[in-house]
Image 1 (cartoon, helix red, strand yellow):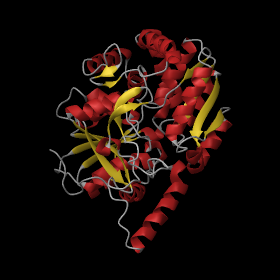
Image 2 (cartoon, rainbow, N blue to C red):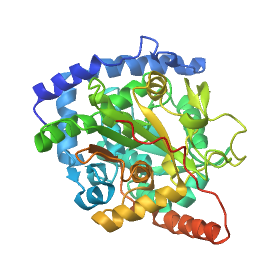
Image 3 (cartoon, rainbow, N blue to C red):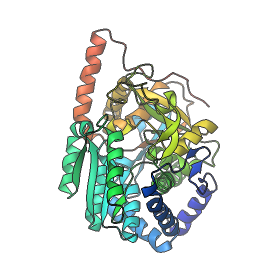
Image 4 (cartoon, one colour):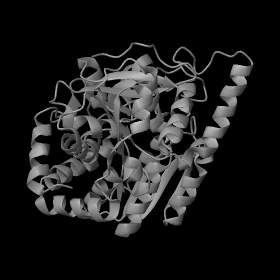
Length: 431
């Protein structure tokens, strides 16, 4: 974890980079577009977060949980065979080795400790791929809090092992049956449940999205990823990386890696979203590539336009990336050019998933495989000493059934001469 003085210095440096204004706006993005019943609870949450964030006792308690419950720090692993294949030095930030197998626990621990400080007795959350639901159920069990997890019926089908894990830890899984029956529906229904129980319940949002203060709060708790990676890469290589890359759905794992490097102008950053069957089709989740600013789930941010994807909702191979918006800070980073956003298609993702398994004996989450797919697209273009950190945001045990199904679909499409599963435009490496 590093000593508290070092951690504080890193956070103070980060705070100089980008903070939302008092109304929660990152430039024109973010804010708090909510019905009147949620205004007071969000004000209460903002005040509590800002107070406890800087409280040394709270910080020490969170550091202990990261160390003893979560198992941090996670390794920064030199993927030597993958590096040889790609022609660059590739380091994997192994969030798949975090307790429960993904980065989601970082934020859940922080918010659950905050909920307990606020005197809440119950946690309500949404989940897409199920990893946030599992992490929320785990921390609720650890802290003795009741827990309801809202999950789209379609995601429950795709990620049934995670449904079982959530229930094993004592939480209740509530099927979201509205709309596309995926993450969007789960968010809508979870927020509705929170409104009905707002005095005793805490809404634990899983990504860097939603009304203020959630984007700021999730970034704060997920920045442990980038803080560790920044120290580790300097210890191992004596310098900062040339490139950071991470998958981007709602954007919590990406902003967690990126934020501690924001002031380092020489470090390039790429968020990789889901092109699904192709950004020119109606089956994708490529918010930054195809979307426009709009209000969704209490914030103004880039969104996929209504009617531009299939009536069943936006699509991709990874349940955790099928959100039709993105965190508002990412929207500002896109506009300013500080972070570049690319899109990877299902076929590319399957190939990258298989390659990491075969080269390194590591099974990545399909979400994380989008970032790996971006690197594979650039194979042979890297300078010999190019140093890359990939946030391996989760492990792929949960994805086996979906992987087999989608690989078979891709094989059938190719056998029939189909041209689907294309990624975004090939724009090359920027050096």
